[in-house]
Image (cartoon, rainbow, N blue to C red; front, side, top):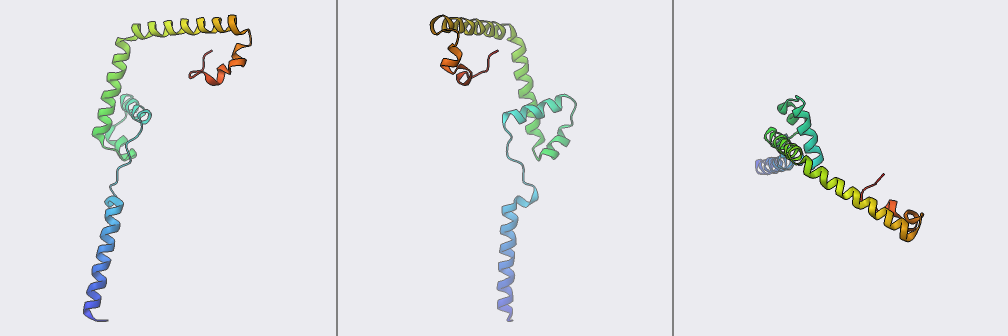
Length: 128
């Protein structure tokens, strides 16, 4: 085999391995960003005393992202706590509206209104 052919083969091999390495992310590929449920789960784990660095390594995530999600989760919880009375009032009003709706349906459609309207399958939230 001539030296020119050998150089060509080596060049192609280098290009191939560079392409493979580039496509694999060099072995340091991060996981895709998790959904909000997973972010909240990780934030709670940190708040319960978990080590951000260890969690980030396990999940293949940036520790700064996990710290940011923890701060966002805390802000959300604090906002919920500050507005609990207002939120509870809204829940109470909506519960009254649901009860009124159920009574009106019973009065106008009959005792079997839930079956006739397929209420159980149509309700966005399952009511007790």
